[in-house]
Length: 384
Image (cartoon, rainbow, N blue to C red; front, side, top):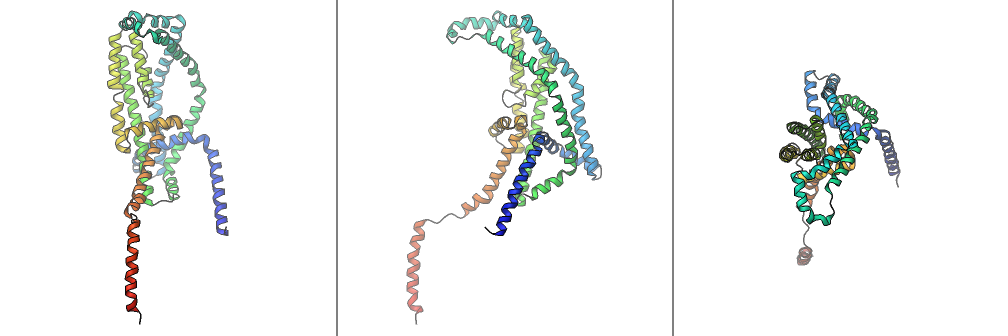
């Protein structure tokens, strides 16, 4: 090993060690920092407008956009949190009182008097061998749901401090990333050993994916929450606002989505004897509430990221498994970045291999005797 190689090996070994220590220092802040990066990329066009209005003063523009984001989040939350909290605790108290008084058990036991119960009695002898007891299953599910709610409502207060800490980190980081983000970006981009146009294509794909996923998810959640709130209000359900907000949150999940809220609500209405309203809510949920998901997400996310719908679905699902809720946004970003690398490989490397096909062995061997014979025929003329 030469002296230069030894110095290079020592440098990169120490550099990798320092990077591992840097990760250890920032590991606890990674999630809030990732949320900050997502917010910066999403609201950067608005920041550019503020920057132009304020004459290029980045500090003033960064402060303005940070306050704008905080107000955009805090004002609706402050206006809606009171109603949401009231309905959430009323819903919890109603579930506990219904379970303790036996009203819930009576409701589930009286389902046999309905048209669906009579239909079940008609067909139950044919499927009795499966030993299915629907009232018992529904009662168990209701008790488990009630127990889950009773257990996890206090967790909101326990996690409030962590939520406030993460919100403070995000708020603090927003200002500096908006103000100095371009310098950080250019410094990081210059360290990547790739062609400039390749780096530009990758970062462009990254930005487009993040902004498209955020916009698609948020718009879908808001629209589905509003549509669910309208449907619950029309059928006369109590706590319609709370259930609408729950539908908006559930719509962020790739499996089930808002159906995890409106389908149990329709079953509850049916068990109360209002099967026409229950069937109407199911049709409304399938066609309108959940159906709008198949319109908004492909329109916003699919068109901009150029990701196939199947890949996008599994990317979100795998992102949830790997990164938690943050994976809803990181999963598509990873897929889009991989596709950008694949595109570069096809343009720069696979194309070169196709442009220079190897010659067949038989052709090269067959041409050698001709060359030897030609040189042998020329050699006597060259000899004096």
